[in-house]
Structures are given as C-alpha cells and as structure tokens.
Image 1 (cartoon, rainbow, N blue to C red):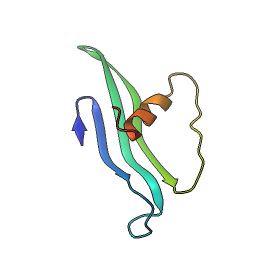
Image 2: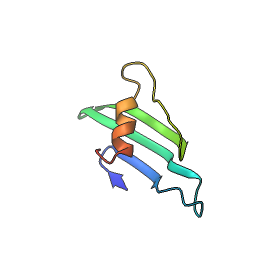
Image 3: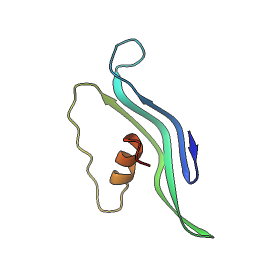
Image 4: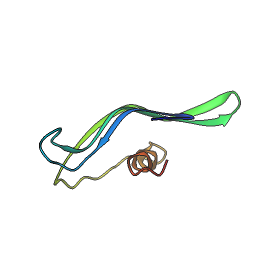
Length: 79
C-alpha cells in the first residue's frame, strides 16, 4: 500500500488460524511522514516493526507527540 507521505511495506491483519502466523497483528517497516510545508516534513513513525499475538491485552504508552495515535490510526485503517 502506497499513500502520499505514508509507507507501509507490509501490514498483516488476520485472525489467528495458526496457518500463516501466530500474530493477530504484524507490522513490518511502517513509516509515516507529515508534510508541514513545501520544504518541511515531520516523521511520526520511522521503520516500525511490531508483532501483537492473539489473545493478548496490550497498551500503547509514550509521551505526547511520540506517534501513538498515528500508529493506531494506521493499524485501524483510518489513515
């Protein structure tokens, strides 16, 4: 999937069937860049790898502006 300012090399979202992966969600090399002006940009996510196993409760923690909402919006298909 290629979008302007967003690079998602591979996102696998699948139910845990045990056939392809043990992870409910798997992100590989996910990046997101926001264009601030014609010559300026801000990288919110830079080459993120993440594996979330099925049947697990997780929390996303970090300081303000660290990319938590950006990551969740990409995983949820909102961005």
